[in-house]
Length: 326
Image (cartoon, rainbow, N blue to C red; front, top):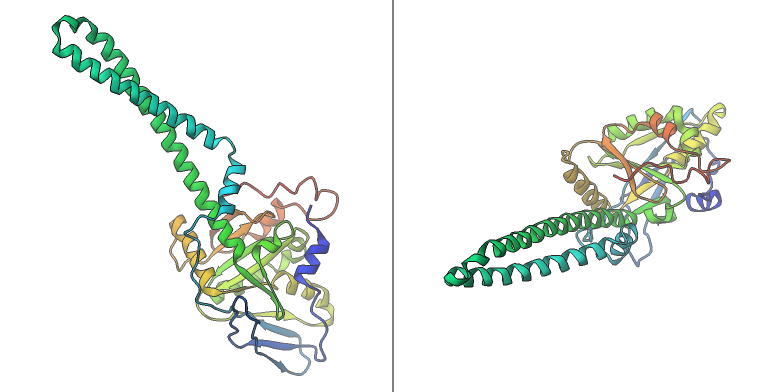
């Protein structure tokens, strides 16, 4: 069951009231480096009290090589856990292939000897029968081994991509950067990737479902692919104060290390046969695995209908009802 205490600790408290009722955040190209303190330059532009407030989402970039092409030991261990008897099956398949190949080799030498010796010509039909059985057995077990190995490689590739996703970084606020794996068991991430206009429209479409999405532990990660910073407008009027705080929490996360996020998303699009320019969404389960994806806007209403709450009577019983893994 997801822990709401952990959720609040990682995401942090709601935005505090400022001296002015509205303001704008402008982050000037922050660059985050591992093993080095963050260097963030923040400017606050105060303006007189008004109805709305805009928060500019800016993703920092770092030219770091991605390890998505390498299969980590963690991915191999997870593969063994998910398919514990696969190695045993593959071992027996190889054993049967070796046994059939040895039998076929012996039968071939006997066949050659019988064909060259007229006195043993009566043994040829039996030898051919045995040779056919050996060839058939080798073919069947080779096919089974090839299919098992293909499934293993596909699973390792998927787990490796999920492991790469879990290592990607997110900015919660100006002083806190976490990895995607930190939200496992706590939040269900929805990644919106596309131009700034796509992010803004997704932001508007999510408004009627804000409270329901938060109850289900959904947090949105907006990733603008056109280099523009989408400006999310929040209504700061007194009547909308409560819903505005929830809206800010829902859209609080922002990706860090743009190059790594871009590489991971491009790989996902390539595997799905989607154009790199297409706006897409990805929905993650509580365990951090991809449960759904598609081209276009996230189906907020479907997420509300399909996902169970992360707290309350049904939280523990329905924690595994996130949907099947893609």
